[in-house]
Image (tube, rainbow, N blue to C red; front, side, top):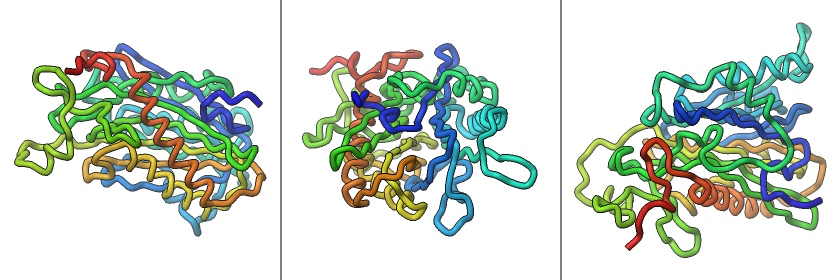
Amino acid sequence: MVMLGAITDVSGIKVGHYTDKQAVTGCTVILCESGAVAGVDVSGSSPGTRETDLLRPGNLVERVQAIVLSGGSAFGLDAATGVMRYLEERGFGYETSAGRVPIVPAAIIFDLNIGDSKIRPGANEGYQACLAATNIEVAEGCVGAGTGATVGKILDVERAVKSGLGTASQKIAGDIVVAALIVVNAVGDVIEPGTGKILAGPRKPDGSGFLSTSELWKGEFKEAVPPFNTVIGVVATDAKLSKVEASKLARVAQVGIARTIDPCHTMYDGDALFVLSSGEKEADISALGAAAAEVVAEAIVRAIRKAETLAGVPAAKDVIRC
C-alpha cells in the first residue's frame, strides 16, 4: 500500500471537510462507518466536547461511527447532528430495539473571533462534510475545522498567526499504521520539535518575527488572556485496541502536543484527542504511543506550514523574519 501521509492511510477511515472561507469557519468529519473502538483524553481546562463521557472505560458503548471536529465554538457541536443523520440513513450505528443510533463524539474550536461570528457549522454543514468524505488524500491547512484556527493569541487575535488542520501517518512493526489529524487553535506558540524554534507565535509589533508566549506569561504580563483556545484531533490505527487501551493511547498521544505547543494544556485551552482503533492487528501499546506522539507532533507542524493568510491574519510563512 502506498502511504499518503494522512489519517486515511488507516483502513476504514474516511475524511470529509465543509469549508466556509467567507465566514472563516468549517467542520471536519472522520468517518468509520462500520465502527471503531474509541477512547479520548481531555487535558485542557476549557474543552468543548460531546459524548466524551461515553468513551471513558467502564461505560457501555465501545464503538463509534464518526468523530466530528468543528469550528463555531459550542454552537459547532450541532454539526454532529448532521453526521448522525447521514449515518442513520445508511444503517450505521449502535443497535437498539428501536433501531440503530449512530455514536458521534465531537470537539470544537473557538473561531468566533475571526470572520463572521454569527455563522457557525450546524447539522447541514456536518451532513455536507459526510458527503465529501473520501479515503484518499486529505486537504490540509485552512480547510474544514481548521478554517478559522489561529495560534499565538496571548496578545489577542490582532497579533496572532493563522493556523489550520494537519495530518500525518507512519508505519511501525512492519505493517501497522498509526496516523493523526489535528486542528491547531492554541493560545500558545507552535514549536519545531528538536530545535525549539518558534514556528508561529504572537507577532512582534514591527512584524519581524515572533515573541514567546511562555516568556510573556512568566514576565509582567497583566492583560486578560483570550479564552477558549484548543488543539483537537484524532489518532487512528489499524492495531487492535480495547477501550481502556484506546484511552491510554489518547493520553500518551498528548505528548505530541507537549512537544510542539508552548505552553499547552492551559486553563485557556481545551486540548482533546480521540483515538480510533479499526483493525485486528496485535501491537505493543508503548510502541503505538511512541508513534502516536510523533504523528500528532508532525500533524501540528503541518497545520502551520499548510496554512494560508486569511481574514487579515497572516500565515507564518508570510511573517517577515529578521
